[in-house]
Amino acid sequence: MFRNDLSCRKAEPQDARRIWKILQGEIEVMRNAGRNQWQNGYPNPETVAQDIEQQVGRVLLQKELIVGYCALILTGEPCYDNIANGQWLTTDTSGNCHYSVVHRIGIASDLTGQGLATQFLILLLKETQQLGCESMRIDTNHDNVQMLHILSKLGFTHCGNVQLPDGPRIAYEIKL
Image 1: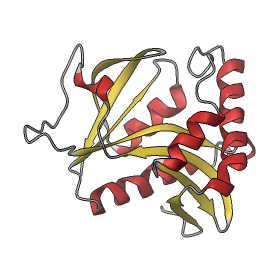
Image 2 (image 1 turned 90 degrees about the vertical axis):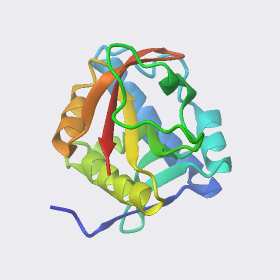
Image 3 (image 1 turned 180 degrees about the vertical axis):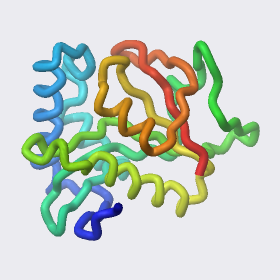
Image 4 (image 1 turned 135 degrees about the horizontal axis):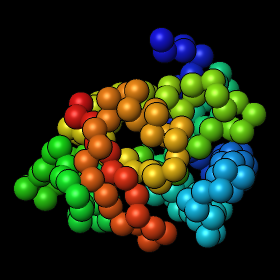
């Protein structure tokens, strides 16, 4: 069931400090779980600033409080051009980006376990559909069990593997 106290909007420059605090919490969670994802200086405050400047940053609001963050990219992901051990559900030969990409999703560490990441992705799926994209793609590390569970629950399909600058990732897509 969708919570009606949640909304999503573009991130603004004044949000950067809160966003970085949320991402730092996620970095620490991954470190404590022994994961390699996000342990090499990415993401960082400069990444957040670039996301905001490029207008791809999105914040999840619980009433007026920022409780989550991600980048919603509508211009494609070059790392997704080469998928191994599978294939994407959708293809586009027109040269236009026909999918959205979610990167750097994080939820405030004091609010994890409440289903907020799932709710955030639902809002992002709605935005993606309203923008006319036919699908959403996302990748995650093999040991990010929480994200793997969420993607399965929302109906994302495992499509193969992609190579990001900081390592291999499992690639998923959902048609809208």
